[in-house]
Amino acid sequence: MKTYDLIIIGGGVVGCMTARFLSRYQLEILLIEQGADVGVGASSSNSAIIHAGYDPVCGTLKAEMNVRGNAMWSTLSGELNFDYDRRGDYVVAVGDEEFQVLEHLVEQGRRNGVPGMHIISAEELRMREPDINPAVSGALWAPTGGIADPFMATVAAAENSVQNGVHILLETSFEDFIMDSNRIVGIRTNRGEFRCRWVVNAAGLNSDVVMHKAGVRPEFCITPRRGEYSVLDSSEIRVNNVLFPVPTEKGKGILVTTTTHGNPIVGPNAQVVGDKDDRAVTEAGIKEIWAGAQKLFPSLKPRALISTFAGIRATGNAPCQRPGVKGNDFVIEIPETVQGLVNLGGIESPGLTSSPAIAMRVIEMLQDAGEKLVEKPDWNPIRPPRPRFRRLPREEQIKLINSDPRYGRVVCRCETVTEGEIVAEINAPIPARTYDAIKRRTWLGTGRCQGSFDMPRVVDILSRELGIPPEEVTKKGAGSQYLFRRTKDVEVQP
Image 1 (tube, one colour):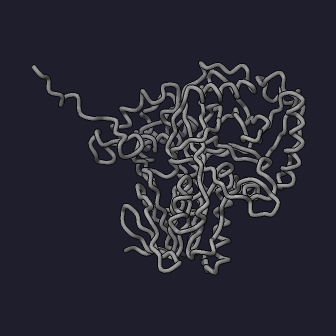
Image 2 (cartoon, one colour):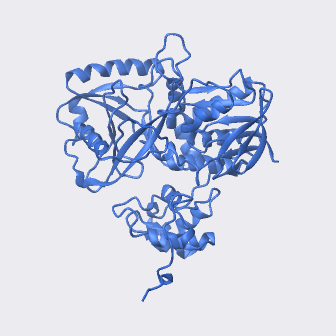
Image 3 (cartoon, rainbow, N blue to C red):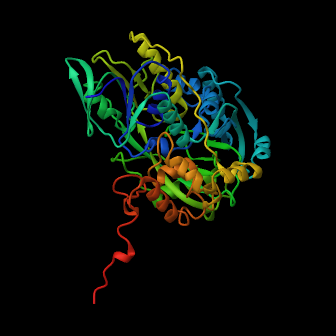
């Protein structure tokens, strides 16, 4: 039975960031993820916003982690080489009543420590975003807001942790703890038992299940909240900024934003569902988010729609621990009732923004608990980038093709993704072994044709590189095979 110093349950952005920051120390670390890839849960289906921090209630962990995490993304993106753009964001008021709310948000943001916020006029907003609703009355401008590639932020953190000695097991499901009295000494999984001194519960939607297995917070419950989105064709509509409506008691509302890949998206709504895996996109939900989006951009037309998706938020019910502060909060703790557990739960929005700060808080809590963390002399914070053909100058493209002709074979025409890029991801530190894993890393299959052109070729490349029959190639893991049999194998009945 393999023994580790620390095991992380969950390969979303929080788990992978925690693994990456802990990889700095002389620890044997294992991260387990039940999916076929890292970042396949909430980290793969969200708004991709790095929030400034004016929205969380003052005094909450959400507010603290948001602002602290926001300040870390510039350095992180430089070290890990993923897309990030600190372009700021707007909260757009329509009418006098909504305009009055902006002052409250500015004051709340200042109390949370958000720098640089101010209110701009309707005229100035229309200059910055010409297609905005003519009835706007003004907006809150927060220059520290931004957008990131949440898929590659997760993958890059995980890859850097592997480069620094962390072990990652995919398709590995947590089943139970191994206990010695009130101390955790290991975990049971579908792939066997593993011993350890510490476990970090970063299980996202299943964080309540994990903590209950340890006898911690029996009252804590994750309520899955589904959010639906529409992805738009950038050739049909141009959105330059991150635009929120004025928030309500139900949440931040339907936003309209650009992405690091250039495709505008609209959404999400917020629907409580009974199934943590319910990512269905509904007709009513799409109508709801379009109505919200057209409040900000009346010129949005359905013909711009190229794709839809839904994500699930891990909404918890833990109250803020600060006296007098109302509202649900993150759970970030080492419980007193059980030894060896770092407990992270209810990490919903602004969870992506907060993830590096949560990782640092885990380190601080371990040190406060007496863990002697010794830095590795050879720790390397840099994840080397891999070529992105469409972004290279022409002369660099020619050099790349001369060094490897596979970079001269375009597989995805919409996004100009080459065979060389696909093969590089299949052979990366965390291999992309499914179509969706390649899609998340290269943006292949996200254009107007939505993969109808490239899919057969990608299946062929995966089959060749992984050494498996085409019938075993999957979209997202077990049970999602593309092919049932070869056409030539069909027997014609007389």
